[in-house]
Image 1 (cartoon, rainbow, N blue to C red):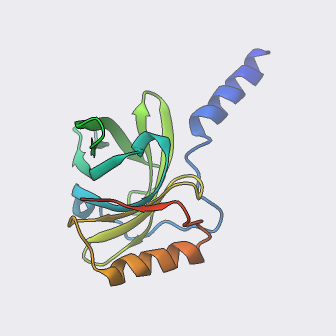
Image 2: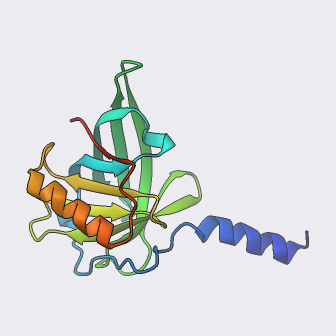
Amino acid sequence: MKPFALLTTLLLLLTGCTGLPKGIEPVTGFDQDRYLGTWYEIARLDHSFERGLSRVTAEYTLNGDGSIKVINRGYNAEKSEWKEARGRAKFVGDSDVGHLKVSFFGPFYASYVVFELDDDYSTAYITGYNRNYLWLMSRTPEVSEEVLEAFKARAAAEGFELGELIVVKQ
């Protein structure tokens, strides 16, 4: 492979997963400081890196360089052990837009798109670079049935397939 083609391929691999799903718009007026702290995973689409986990949380704190430290934790009851992933997040563009990129593996980043966020920053709807990723996050370990149903309705309206949606045991 020629050097330019190799570089282009590498750049596509490094940036290809930081885009937005077609038709999904990240929230604007995003306030990083209000978003920091602990969030509880209420619901998610199933995927291998969280399979079998309950009591899942995400903790966001500010790093000295302005990036965001991410600590995701979940409990695997089958193995009777906690699983933890540490990463860092950066804004893809402006810091008042809820579109970040998150890395748990060196230079490889993936989209973290906040596409719904209530005024008091108590619940958030998150997706990745495509509609295979979806989370409902909350500041509390439980939400009302109305909150969960509103999330499902919005996700379905946005084209997410909810057949594999898991309501997480907290």
